[in-house]
Image (cartoon, rainbow, N blue to C red; front, side, top):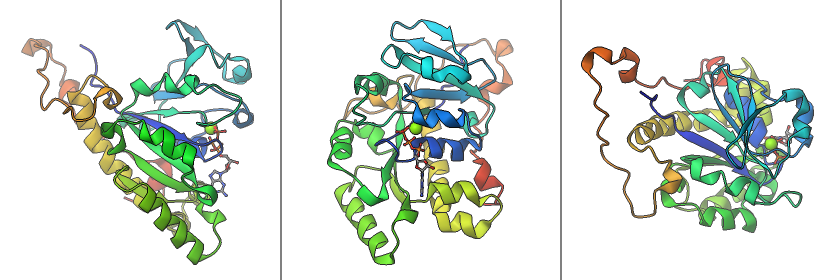
Length: 277
Ligand SMILES: Nc1nc2c(ncn2[C@@H]2O[C@H](COP(=O)(O)OP(=O)(O)OP(=O)(O)O)[C@@H](O)[C@H]2O)c(=O)[nH]1
Ligand SMILES: [Mg+2]
C-alpha cells in the first residue's frame, strides 16, 4: 500500500528574492554547495529520506547526478532535480525550490511544467521592489485552491531602513494582494538564519509569526493531501476537495500501524533551537 501523500510546497518568486535562503532556513541545512547559487537550476524537489540524488528528464527518465556537477545538468531537458534529506520539515511536507519566475536566461516552461505537482506556495517577494507586475501576473493564473493555502513572504525586510518605509510597503502589498494569500509576513531571512540561539534576533527577523502560520497551514494541508490524491493545483476553481476518499480495503491483519499515524508537527531547526513554538 502506498504511503500517505505529503503536501508539496513550492518556493516561488522573482530571482534573488530568497527562495533558496528560505529552503536553507526551513531545512536547517544547506542542501546544495554554496557556488550553486550562481547556477541556473531546474526546480529542486526535496523529500525525506537518504536516497541518492537524481534528475528526472522531461520524458520521465531518471538519471543519477552528482551534487558537485550541478552546472552540467541540462536545464531545459530536466523536469526536476530530486534530493533526499533526513530533515524534520521534510517529515511533514515536500519542498520544491523553483527558479526565478522572470529569468531572461530561462524559459518559463522550465518551472510551469512542474506546477501541476504542487499543493501550495510560499511566495518570496523582495521588499525593496515588492509585488511587481510580473509576480501579480503569475499569481493570477494560480487556482484559488492553491492561493488560499499559500503564504506571501516580504523578504529582505532589513533592506527597508525606516519604520515609515516598512509600514508603507506592508500596507501596499496587503492591499494589492487582498484575498489572494492565506497570510502575509515581512521577514529578514538572513537575520533568521543567523539567529541561532539568539531569541531576540529570531523574533526581530519576523520569523516567529511566519513559522507559526506555516505549521498551521501544513496541518491543514496534510489533511487535504490525505483526501486528495491530486495536488491542489489540479483542483479547478469552484470544485471542492473530496470530503472523504474511500480508503482502499486492506485486510485488518496486514494493516501496518504506521498507516494510521498522525503526521508530526514541523520543527524548523532554527525555530526549535530557539525554543520558539
Ligand atoms: N539582506 C538580506 N539578504 C537576503 C535575504 N534573503 C536572501 N538574501 C540574500 O539574497 C541573495 C539571493 O538569495 P537566494 O536565496 O539565493 O535567492 P533565490 O530566490 O533562491 O534566487 P534564484 O534562485 O537565483 O532565483 C543571497 O545572497 C542571500 O543571502 C534577506 O532577508 N536579507
Ligand atoms: Mg534559488
